[in-house]
Image 1 (cartoon, rainbow, N blue to C red):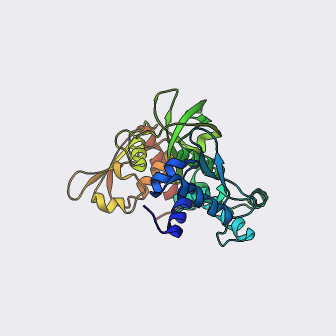
Image 2 (cartoon, helix red, strand yellow):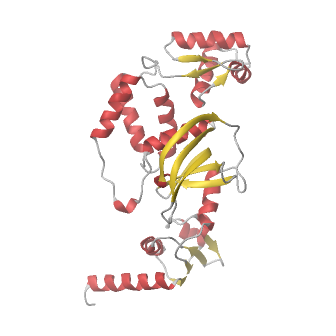
Length: 323
């Protein structure tokens, strides 16, 4: 039982920020107090400016909603706008902090007043950043935020999805988690129509829409429960257009530190040699992956890969001039 009231209220606020809605019974169990104590603590949060709403339904509940003013987070309006825009930018692709920024963004936008949402949108639309083509397709920050909330709340969403061969169809899924890998974002979800787990690239996903229907959380199949490991395993075994496997004259550990290939695609075959599966749908990406090996290797690849590599080598030699 949490007897320290300030600590209990901070715990209560943290719980309200991690899920869209809690029943009074659930909160009482988590905090180890009575329902009456929860109601008093909710009233204290409201007095401090936190917009906690009571919900209807079986046994009733509570949720943290958008308020008419920012709750006392030691942020003024300008600071709240600046942080929200920065988090949106980071969640959209600033390397290394995407997942942390997305979690913080979901919490902040949940209580952002309507008048500030307009400022954030205006500033976002009036600014732009340089995107290098080599970084590949990027996910939309609004889509990331919507799907992050759906994963948190176990809420079914619908969207349109374009596959790698260009066909598209509507999807209805139970979102589980978001995973960032190699500059791309993936949604791990249970597809209700196919009655199976699927992985969706967010840059191929459009018109996401929450349905308002929540379902019990599902457990990932093998090699779950780690979503990142699940996505890595699926990507490593997914069908690709071009096959290219290099036998590298270097240790697997030394290759892992200088290539972006998934760890599951690097396999040791002796103390001083390993194989690296660089297979991909893109010939330029295969060439880039092989270049990062930075050591001698032999290659087992499709004829199209060999032809492309020879053409690239010829262009490089021509560009450097006579020896």
